[in-house]
Image (cartoon, rainbow, N blue to C red; front, side):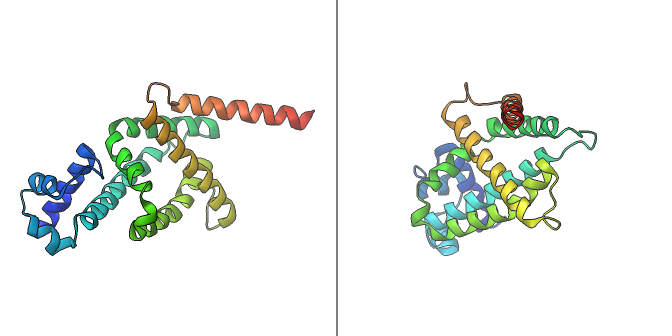
Length: 195
């Protein structure tokens, strides 16, 4: 690897170990085995390097998330599929906790980092159809509007559950808890409709 790649690997390690705001240029240099001048040469600033490292780490986690959402073709029940997917997603939260803490840390500063905001907005737009397909089997090519709103719903749920796992992992919902909540909501909705 060259210095640029070494810096990215070191920056990703620092994001996980120290977080976005607490990582210094010297931390990245120590983790990457490079020098301070190489940060400026390859990225222009520590912030630009951290932003790119965070985006790469998020892309890598996104690939793992896609794998976790891959369902067994025999799962025909929507709520069963929902529960199984969420159980696998929650497992990812527990193994990637520090990465998600860094993501939330950067969200708090998003007003000041327009390039990251643009990348995250674009990633969210691309993720919504996949979420709609995985959870509800809604094909965006067939029903773009439904895929967008259902994908947005699952994206909001993903962010909210992630936040709960960061704040209070002992009381955060499991895949089973989320499926049970969905069953209750659907049952009450049917009862109100029938009344």
